[in-house]
Image 1: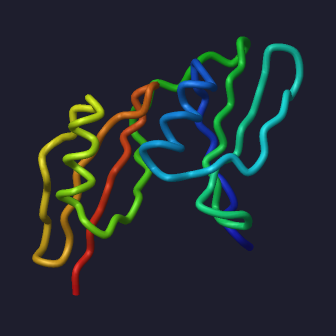
Image 2 (image 1 turned 45 degrees about the horizontal axis):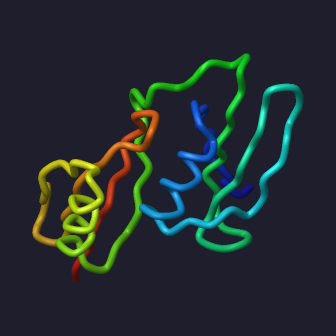
Image 3 (image 1 turned 180 degrees about the vertical axis):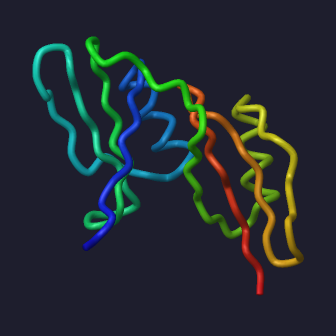
Length: 121
């Protein structure tokens, strides 16, 4: 068994694709219409990786981000946080639950919390 994707219902596919490409470094792996008023895009670091599936559907409504977060590991948390702040994304405070881990959150266009984490040995 392999974990392959997480689906997020979104309100604007173009805005969400742009967000995940620019802010999380993901690229579109597949994108296609999936029926009347429905379009899907799968994004990942590279082909074969676990994907974020963005689904825009007039009939399904929009998930409002409650109770879920997606995490991304970064090499330099301070640099990443400064870039998010410069982009106007209002990053939250840096949280350090132990001496080896630090992280902060931003929100995607539909309110999903996105965590950026730095881990040191």
